[in-house]
Image (tube, rainbow, N blue to C red; front, side, top):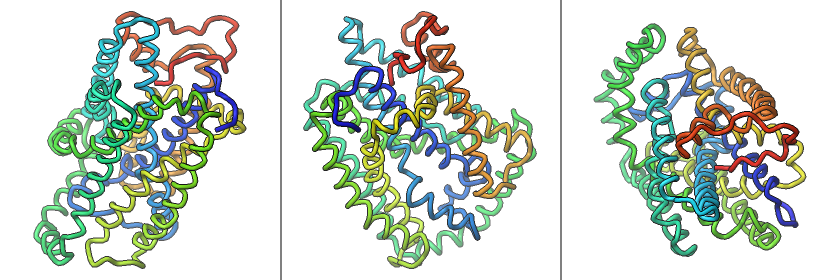
Length: 409
């Protein structure tokens, strides 16, 4: 953030840098699920067990990464919704019809992604939750914020309810399902390691996709809450008239920092089994991950500074091609771990190093691509479906890369 108003192109780059930052964090969180059976373990209320360097890396992720970056991404989606609708209105376009086509295209991407590639898709959730943003576009700022924080309170209350279940009852339930869990886990890993593509997809339809569908509503609560926060930021002009909101930005930065410190401290003690509430530790950790996910989300967003923009320009270009890079992360990871037979044989540290290398290549590729083209490949397809005509893909001649005027949505 800076003391002067952000110009059109600078505002776009600022938002895209935040989006690129969030995209990297999401990839770090997703990477273990690409190479290890986290899905099946989570279905049975089990966590991954790590030792050595992986143990401390897992603690670090829990404190500063997990549930912190999808919230930023969701916030930016809500902000992007406001920018999209506002610009469409200024141009005299049918903004609701355009937006619904945009959401429908996103839903198609998400359904193909979750069925053909990976259970962790977020696009279908964004598409379905995103429809309800239309009911809030013309609402007052206060109303939007009340809904947003009410949903966040409801979410964390749901997590907190798990803390009222005595550990002994949970232990008995886990012991009664231990045989089923062991067999399911063995089958799951075997399919991921040995099955052909069609058999793998067929198995996933019965094992993963149905579970994802059942959990759509609870998964949508934090997403929609952050959508509303982003929409509120757009309506307040937080990223448009920064100088007018500088005091507010500094205040939010300080408040979220002060809130985050004790929450992170408790989460660290829980994660390292130093603190024990007498309940299943996984549930307590989940609650404090959620709480820190909200506070650190706003802190990370408010830490943006103009002086960082030139240094983080490549990160901004990766964010500008967020849809393409998000889908390519899945494709590359599935091909490498499942297709080449590395699934189940990769440590958390190795997976994280691969994540950093892949994302670094994505930043380089995004920078190169946007020198020649206006949009990423999937962004181009998304916009073409939205406007029901093929968009110009080739970059106009003699347009500097830092003046690309793509809409940050």
